[in-house]
Length: 141
Figure 1 (cartoon, rainbow, N blue to C red):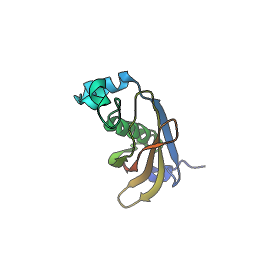
Figure 2: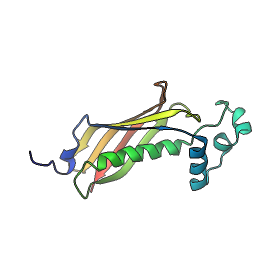
Figure 3: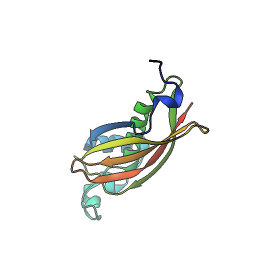
Figure 4: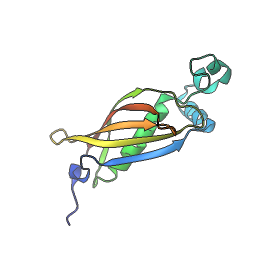
């Protein structure tokens, strides 16, 4: 069987995922890298007064998980592969320290002319509750 080339390497319905348990160290490392030390993420006393009642992970950390899963998809495309091109996400529930987040991308459509692969995104916690939803675009290079 011949190796599939370019966009053919990812079929509609193809799924990739990853899971990660969010630790205090993860949130503090992310805050240190980005400079985002907003209290809802790093100050328990401040966060206790919010509607969440405790510290929560940065939404952008979850977007990083999408990038990881996109990288797994791009790796299936023969060289030169593909790159993240667009993210359109909605944060629908907080992610608290100790939550295990599973991020799943499912190829939903392809635009051959633009060399784009569009995937639906769902991130859920260990209770199966959706914490993020949206879609993302992988540009085949």
